[in-house]
Image (cartoon, rainbow, N blue to C red; front, side):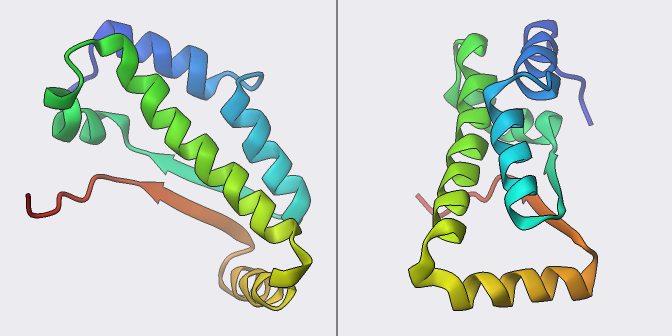
Length: 114
């Protein structure tokens, strides 16, 4: 797997790995809500390899990818907190508890036919 350019590595460090970042705060909130560890696998080198042609400005790449994760996390939190989804929430939590006790998500690229 190719190494990320320095700019992207710095952005990952500052915007993804930093516990005070907005996305880490959202992931922490999700973890507290479900009472489980939340693990998001973000294979940034693979994602960069597949998507770099769509990001001529490297400075926008990491914020965009992290923005997707934060939006997903915030939407999942809203769904879990919505009483209308109580049955779905219980089923999700039961299945995660049985499988691993860790809520896992993987961020990857899926190219559709254009």
